[in-house]
Image 1 (tube, helix red, strand yellow):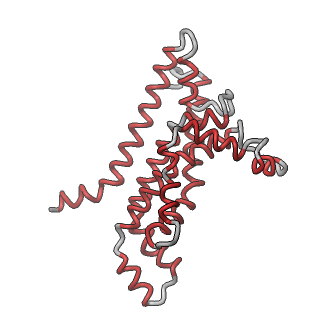
Image 2 (spheres, helix red, strand yellow; image 1 turned 120 degrees about the horizontal axis):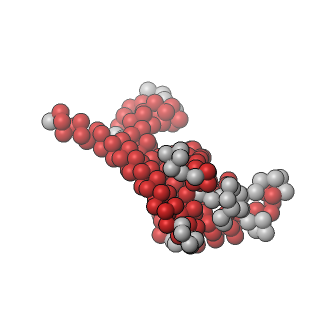
Image 3 (cartoon, rainbow, N blue to C red; image 1 turned 180 degrees about the vertical axis):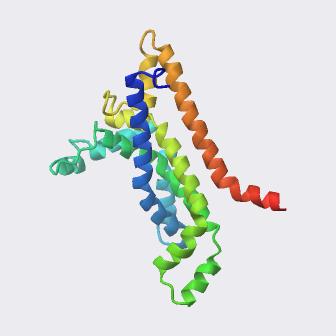
Length: 232
């Protein structure tokens, strides 16, 4: 495959993998906290929080990218403030990580929340009566029993981030070597005369990554169900 893909193709593929992995890594702590809050607590405005959570899945990705640009662009108040400290996201690969994280975040939170909801709260209540604090109950009971759902959510969020296009190109544009991810490279080749062989190559690579992610998520999420059926 090293000879099959050009240097630019490898650059786009590696960047996409890096963006997808980092988007999940940085999203996971926030997703764990929010999923636990939505699963274990009822508070004023929880319905609004859930509605806002799923906006990236409902809105056109281009709108999400524009919102990020309006919030974190150099001319935006927050973006200008961060730029004074040398923190710039717009038109940088780090901005691609932000865009991918935003788009994959709902899938990550949803999977983790479903996993938390499946944990028997009586186990947590029993641990509380024995003096276990909330953080200890989470670390020793809730999280270990939810690891399968957490892992599946990470894989789904990774797959969504890997294939992200609209929000990324709206927020960080198409800069070779900086923000030119695999989906953007495919779109660029579609608009270049004679670019179809490259489109075929990169599409096949994207398909292989997507299949691997889908198979991993299915095995992780369905493994326990398969064992139960086999044991039955």
